[in-house]
Length: 231
Ligand SMILES: N[C@@H](CCC(=O)N[C@@H](CS)C(=O)NCC(=O)O)C(=O)O
Image (cartoon, rainbow, N blue to C red):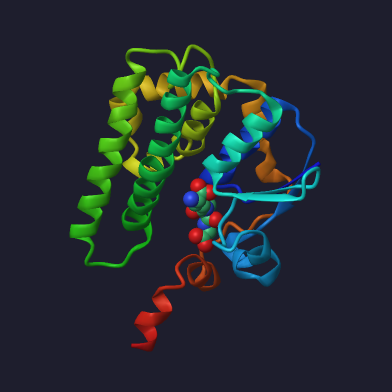
């Protein structure tokens, strides 16, 4: 059994999709990051980085954290959704998984922060992160103009990593973004049509997660702001 430490946000969504696609048995453990539960000692013992997702695989007694590491771990464990065993497929898989982990995710996350949550003045950081988020998504759009899936000829963990963040594209890049990323939209729609994607999306209703953005939420999500008040 896999314990899946989950919050309804982009990185955990990747793992929700894998678990629903693969049929691996799992138990959902809600971590309400808007209430600050990611900073509690119980969760930090699982993920010292204090972020969702994480898993505990009780079959081997292993914790795995960081979403794309979890995707690779579960794909190798189950033998499912890896683009291919040959060296070229492995090279492509690692490259695009890391591109999503280190580029798409962080730049999209920072673009969201500066677009929606940071105080003024923010012209400089918003311009930087919006530019970089668009640049990364356009790289995926150009790749998807030439191929059905991100790596290989079949749906894989790389597409699942993509889906986690693609769900938030209008929030990241603005309401008109889908019109400018037609190939990203095509793969996104293809994945959304899969029953497992709908089940993964429904996990958000499995627990009464906090949705209000109030002072508690801002303190939990942006603990660095305490330094500004103290200064
Ligand atoms: N590199 C990590 C990033 C995880 C991450 O940033 N998770 C977000 C949800 S998408 C989170 O837990 N945020 C709560 C916080 O930052 O306190 C991964 O890919 O899993």
